[in-house]
Amino acid sequence: MAKRIVSVTTQTPTATADTTNLVDATYPFLLQGGSGTQRVNILEVYLGGQAGASAPTFMVLSRDTTAAATNSLGTGQTDAPLDASTAALAAPPLVGNTNTTKPQRSATAHLLNLSFNAFGGIVRWVAAPGEEISIIGNTQPLGEVSLSAFTGGTTGLLGAHMIYEPF
Image (cartoon, rainbow, N blue to C red; front, side, top):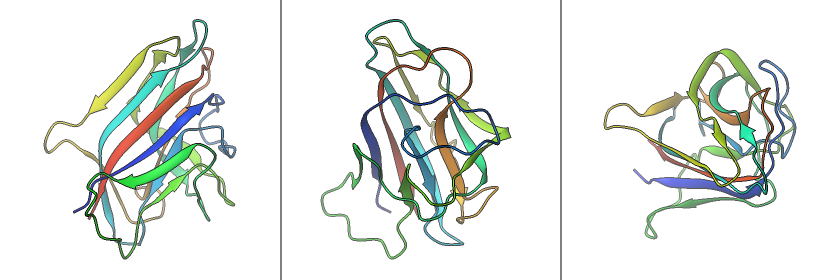
């Protein structure tokens, strides 16, 4: 199928406790299936620090216990196909960080700890073949993941992207 990339140019995330509403435009992005049966594999997650001073930033990719509704891209976010000849999807996955029903990160389903110093640091996770993180459907507990800052540390300015492949 068609690999896609969602990215945010620059953002300072807000540290949020598990099972608490994520606030619009305070986390890099979430990914939700475009239909009740769609499978989406996450192939890569990248964070690049842009802070002007030391900023230990605790970022978590996690399943969500409350799924977002009416999700859309926020300021500085893009979602694009990697291959220029990609055809439009019948049920495209939903990405973004602005929504009517706010997502809540699970306390028991953290998938990746992407902690790093946002003062010039980078963190990149790439799935080994057959070990991709997947979502299925568009409802909790398996149909949505979010990338957000966890409590503690000092969040810093960052840029981020995630490469994913819908089926």
